[in-house]
Amino acid sequence: MEKVIIRECKAGDMYDVLGLIRQLKPEKVYDEKVFAKVYKTRITQDPSKYIVAEKNGILGFMELKLDNSALRSAGSKGTCIIDALIVDETHRSMGVGKILLEYAEQYARNNDCKSVALVSALRRMRAHKFYENNGYEKSGFAFKKKL
Image 1 (cartoon, rainbow, N blue to C red):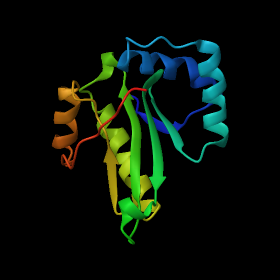
Image 2 (tube, rainbow, N blue to C red):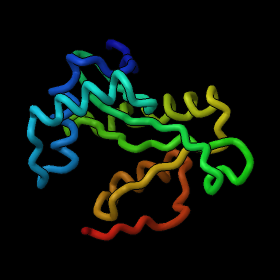
Image 3 (tube, rainbow, N blue to C red):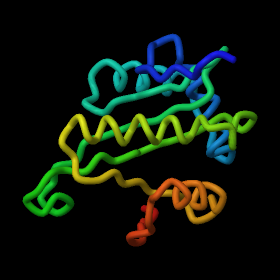
């Protein structure tokens, strides 16, 4: 069995990444031309790190960001934020998400972070259980207001 490879996103991964995002948010309509422009800019210029898990195709996608804001770090080391973690529906519960989490945690350690944090939609109960099973604790609520 081939090993899952974790690597930074490339321009050629765009349609696979978009497919994963569409799985996560099927109700949202994405303009491919706009997405392509934003994707290219992000993977080449954004300080966030865009990662894919690959094994005979793209199995997962993750966006990582280092946050050293005073509020989160309270004068100590920063936090690594997982802004997105998506595993292809056909490859869930096969260890891909765990491999991505482990990568995020090592990336955080390498960047002298004190913690890893993420937000997950309320309806994603299976994902919540996955995070808890991997040592993550619920630590608050996220609020938003549509404008």
